[in-house]
Image (tube, rainbow, N blue to C red; front, side):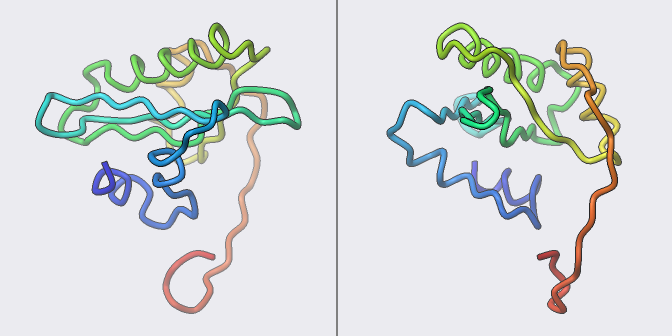
Length: 129
């Protein structure tokens, strides 16, 4: 799972370890595997302000994309957040350039609320920060 996370989010400040090692009721990690390898995962959490469920991370291995794993993971996390945890809504953020991810979210019932311009600054080491 860590290898898939590094491939999917090489420059992300989000770490998967926080979800793998959690023991609280505010975070959950769902994993899809074929028994030998991780095909995908989704990390979800509960935010207090605004009070909502949130999809923090979603990754599917490139070799199995477009086979329904991403949508199954999304719907599983949404069910956990809405039905099991009682959240009034589920939110997520996606970069504008990720058209494939945006299509997945829309097919899964998510609606675009707004689009914006993201800012970043290179910290001199070649990594964003």
